[in-house]
Image (cartoon, rainbow, N blue to C red; front, side):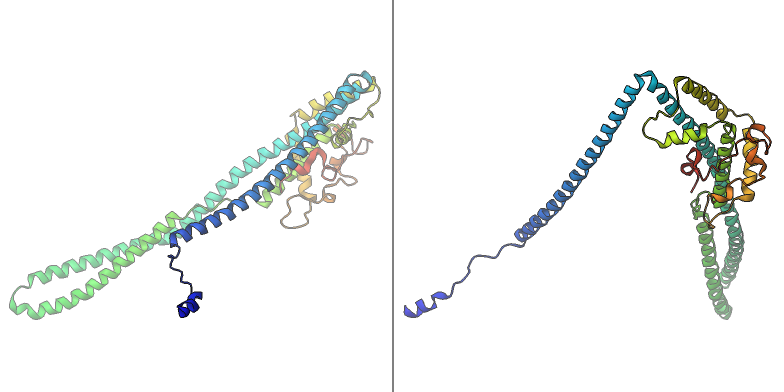
Length: 356
């Protein structure tokens, strides 16, 4: 008994080990817990982002409400209502010019895109024809050789079938040797025919390469036409200060009182109304754009080979430039206001319109 008590420290674990299925469930629970914690953290971050966005939107809404309140107050008083009307009509004039140029550029892009896509497809078809022509010649040659080899085999087999007598033994053996060689040649010809057909099918299945977009030359030409259109619009208003006033109004967020008395504001609004009609008039606009585009092509310079917009200095009008001083038919030396550099001044928001 004493010996047994001394061995009592030995404890045997007689319970069966955990099953593999139970261990797998435990591991799956741990993995699911980790994934849930990760998803929870991502959702928390998304909530913080959305709350921050809501705060930003609330701030923007508050600013807009304040602006509307200020505008309502201004419109309630005649002395401040007229400058507000002038301010927003000037902004509308600027927007009208921008929309005209933007629509003009979109039309040119659509026409040029269709033209270059057709050229792209035509070039692909020409390349396909150049590659397909020798492949078709190889196929026709392979078909001819395969048919000749098959006919040779058929003739020898027919001749072999007629040699049935015992004294034809040596002739049959000679023909068998010839047939083996001819069969090998026919097999090779058939393989060459299969290869030629596969090559032609590969050419036919070759997809049309993706259209890379308008070429740099096309984008440059469209941008020059857009600059020419901007100059043409400025030319129609060059005897008035409206382009500069519209630029200033567009750059401001708040209405200004810098437009004078009620009578001066009414006169300015009449000028703006006439200006709207002038820039929207289509008479001779095509010829004006064409002549100015030709000038721009001669003087435009680019910083790099991949640039699509000319440098600002290169398109500026120089002394003695005929198109720079012909304000509504005025002579270059008549003292009329000179044309501005529409690219340097970002007139009509050109930089938003020009193609990259």
